[in-house]
Each structure stands twice: as structure tokens, then as C-alpha cells.
Length: 239
Image 1: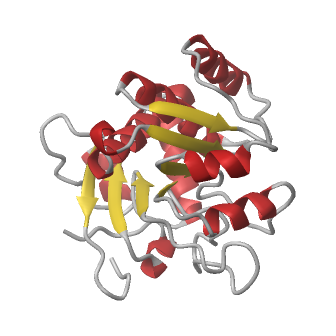
Image 2: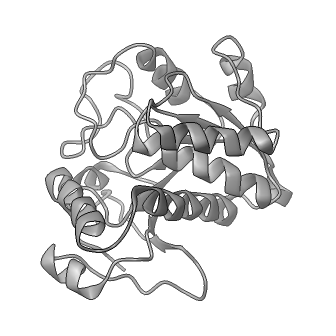
């Protein structure tokens, strides 16, 4: 099955429509996004194959999706830990952080990040989403370089962090050779997926036909109670 991609501009407009006319709140959308990510982790690495999942969160909504995913992973039987080097200022992110603290999910320091990277079974990259426009600012160049050279599987949320949403990986520097093992596109794939080679999932089981028609998107046929659906990418990384 193939799906049409949505531009960053249209993705922002779609989110606006969901909240202004669709009746959705930001925390509802974030909850479903994080649940989709956690389900994708389960599909590629069930707990009997590895339980230690390191979730790296950025300061924006993509990071919020990661915080939600960490909570669900804990309830699914994993042992998540969170690296949150630049916390979001929105009150929503602080509530999500409190929820994780109440589950005794550890937040690791910058000093412990390299060792956590080596001891984890999988990393969830929830640093930057479709609104990322570069260039990378500290502390993220070093973080992405370390993720890029990691030997464990990496699952990226919506887009591989450091990639341009339209043109894909940067030509040089941190992220130039970053190719996560798994990508979970939220609502719809972004154009950068044309440069991606790996397992690709779509998540966001809440779009109506009216909205998909408005943005020229496809309505995936999710199975059973799943919040994610695996979408194949051909040998050239094309949708």
C-alpha cells in the first residue's frame, strides 16, 4: 500500500483544522500520536525481544509525543527512560513529565546519555517533527551525532531528526548519514520519506474522509484495534 505525502505547510494547516473545526485538543492529538509510536515499538520489538527503550525528546510537540509514548511503553511492559535535554515550556509538557515521574520512569542526565545509548535495546527519536527548519542548535548537534552512530535500532517520530521535511537528510554534518530503522509518520507521510529506507508505519487513526479529501490524502485501512499500519517503501525509498 502506498500513501500520498503532505507538505509541512499543509500538515500545519491540517493540525489547525483538527483543533479549530474538528473539535480536537492538542493533548488529545498528542495522546494518539504517542500511542501510535508505542504500538509501533511493540510491533518491531515486543517486550520479550528487549525492554529497555531510551526516548529522546525535543522541546516541542514531537517531544511531547515522545513523553506520551514513554508512558504507554511503561504500561506495555517496557522499561523506558527519557532524555529531555531542553524541556518544553508549555504547561502540557510539564504535566506529561509529572505523569512519567509518577510511574518512576527515570529522566537521565547529559552525562549519562552515552552509556544509556549503549545499554538500551532501542531508541525513540522524538526530537524534531514536521516543523523543523534547521539549522541544528546546541545541544542537538552532538545528540544527533551520537544517535546517528548508535548500534541499536532507532525509531523516529514523524521525521528523522535533522532531516529537512522536503529535501531529506542534510548534505553534511550531524544527521547526514542518519537512517533510522523505523519511521512512524503521523497523520500522513511527509515528503522526506522519499529519501527513507527502512520500516515505515503510518499512525493517527482519527482523520475523517472530509479532511483527507480536502488535503488530497489517503485514508489508511487500519486493522482491528491497531493505531498504526505498516506501509512498504520500495528499494529507492519512494512511497
